[in-house]
Image (cartoon, rainbow, N blue to C red; front, side):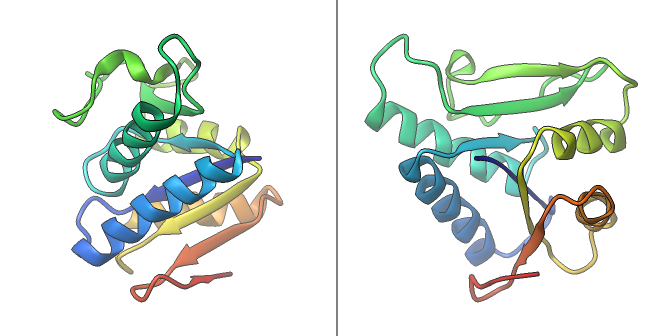
Length: 147
C-alpha cells in the first residue's frame, strides 16, 4: 500500500513523534511512504523513514519512500538525512505546493494528515483525497487516527 503522510509545518512535538512512529510502523508492515519536503511533519517523516532504512536495508536497496518536491523550488531536506537515501520525484505539472500535494494524493492508496487544525494546505490535501475517493484520515493530538 502507498500511504501519503502529510501535515502541518508548525505542530506540537508529540504530533511530530506520532508521525514518525506511524511512518516506521507502516514501513515495518511493508507499506511505501509518500511524503512532501516541507519542514514540520514532512521532515519528521523523512527522518523516521531514513532511520528505518538505515537499520533495515542493505546498501543499494531501494528506499520504500518517495519525497515529492515542486520542480521550481529548492528541495528542502532535513540536515540529518543523507540525500541519496530517498528517491526524489519532481512535480512536472506546475510548480506550486498545491499541485505537488494533489500529485501525491493521486499516487496514494491512503492519506493520513497530521493536522494542527489550522493549516490550510493539509486540510486542502485531505479534502482533495476525499473528493477523489482516496480514504483520508486525521491523526489527533493523542495519536488516534480518525476519518
